[in-house]
Length: 359
Image (cartoon, rainbow, N blue to C red; front, side, top):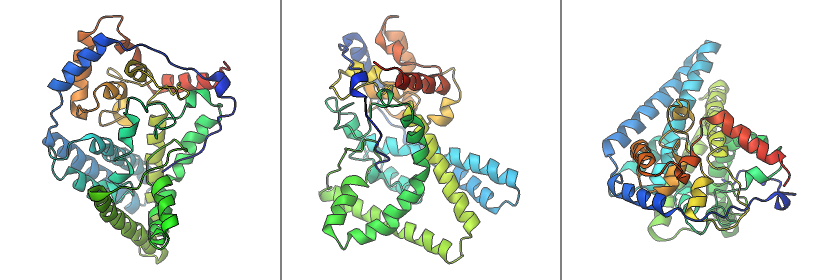
């Protein structure tokens, strides 16, 4: 869903247009690795997803059933991390060839997408626009805002507002979905503005067609029924208000963590100009080993986000090996090395400083 319209006053004067020629040696090496690392391994996908789901929902059950405040908080944190990892597979679903991993999209929607009210159609058909070479960083990119060029207060607001995502999703599926069946005009608004995991407030989604529309309708119906049922259970007391609050708190924590990760996934320094592939890479972020914490806040390959923009078809479990090989293949002065950072604090500080510098 579109999260917020951020203040861009004064950003034009501080705009930083990135004009970088493509590094052909790096791109050739990346193309070679695409051919050798493009095979997804179903066993890894299923084992990882199921383990994350079991951990997340198991810890959530402990948090709900526990009478100890400390145990509830501790279990809630574990639930947040497990469900955040499980949720992050939506990124893989949006990229994968479903014939290679038959049933995975349906399984992910059943285990994560519908229960957490983030069905795969919210990302499929949206995220691919972010990877379009002529759209990245422009007004047509649903996942880009020049955050580094905005005012300092926009950064904490960008993160804080994400805590409301679970409530917004409940409203979207429990109220707007059924009401939109009665009004074509409302349905158009729901599809265009409230059916995409996007941060660009100017993005408008197109109405799906054919098989995509039929799949969308089936999954949206399930998500709507689940949202209505969840609210009904809480309203009738079958699900206690405490339990409902814990569920919302964990879901909010997942959304906030994901928004923090989004905040440092790119440098966000482009003001809307088309960029070369190398410039797009340099505007993106890798947080490779030896740093350990990115495995928690940037799971399922997201710690190699810049590399992913070079190798979008490479499955998440192969990105670590691809990074090591590409690092060895390119020269010491290659731009490839310039997109790697040490960790979250430095990245947050970097974008924070960028908002305070008036160009």
